[in-house]
View 1 (spheres, one colour):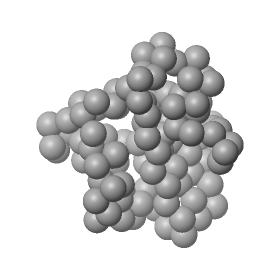
View 2 (view 1 turned 180 degrees about the vertical axis):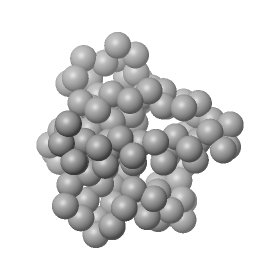
View 3 (view 1 turned 45 degrees about the vertical axis):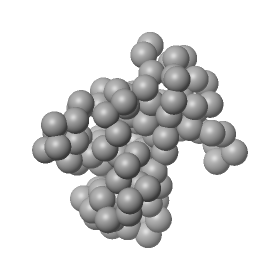
Length: 110
């Protein structure tokens, strides 16, 4: 497993920790849905990887140093917080690159 995948798993664990603290459903990890080009909408990202999605969302962080820092920034931003804690989401994929992190959320099932 690459270090990017390890950090991505930590990012999703931190997101799930925040959701659990608020009694929201924990997200099932589907890492492949986080891998999509910037021109794709979140539902397209989810569907492209074989999941059915009635709705999806994405949150992105730039210039952050750790998964915890990303999640704290998202919690302080009402639009990001709403996506991250939306109880309708059941799956998510996280990706972390150099100074960049993204979580794609979906209501999808395989």
